Amino acid sequence: MLLYDAISPAPRCLRMFILEKNLTIPAQTIDVMTGENRQEGYLALNPAGQTPALRCENGQILSEAVAIAEYLEELYPQPSLIGTTAQERAETRMWWRRVELNITEFIHNAFHYAEGLARFENRIPVLPEAAEGLKRVAQDRLTWLDQMFGEGPWLCGARFSAADIWLYVWLDFGRSVNQAFDPTLPKIGPWFERMDARASAAQSKLLMATLTNTQK
Ligand SMILES: N[C@@H](CCC(=O)N[C@@H](CS)C(=O)NCC(=O)O)C(=O)O
Image (cartoon, rainbow, N blue to C red; front, side, top):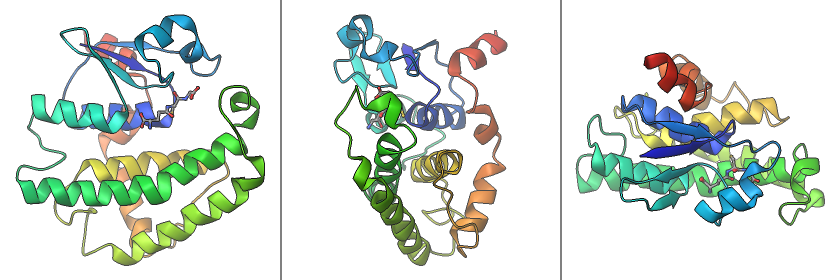
């Protein structure tokens, strides 16, 4: 197995997921800042041109961080981050989709259209005029999520899950690109502090290759 990793939020979601599952996967770093991911060599592996990606044992390349996480959970079910029963898995995916479809995709696109514009305008279609609106939607939907948040401590109640990881990584990224969330949100504020205190939060800031090398 080989992970195509990068210093960026979607790869960090997967790194944090891998760390929480206590896995060590060899990794190669792709330089998304200079656009290595948009050049011939990487496109031959992953025509979608984005990171992360995973080379499976049989040579197949998977991309989309969520799909890779699902694959790893099936290969290595414990500790479970998606669920051990049909109902648990559905609950995780319910929160995961709420997080991705309503919050993190908006943060991501707003970044492409504003702070990341210079880097992305020659890579993908960009809508700078939409950036401020997208930022507002992400924050509005975070308030909506806060209101639905149960007793916790995690999105799926007592069960820590991949949905927590995805939301945390993107909110942490948002803080660095002019999309800071409101830390006074009654549920999300304390939840973020709990997430931030997990060892995987700090460790996932490092690239997987670094972790692999230091563990050897
Ligand atoms: N939906 C994809 C998004 C992948 C994605 O946007 N990756 C970013 C890093 S966060 C990337 O490779 N950006 C460089 C580029 O698009 O040129 C996933 O979750 O894996």
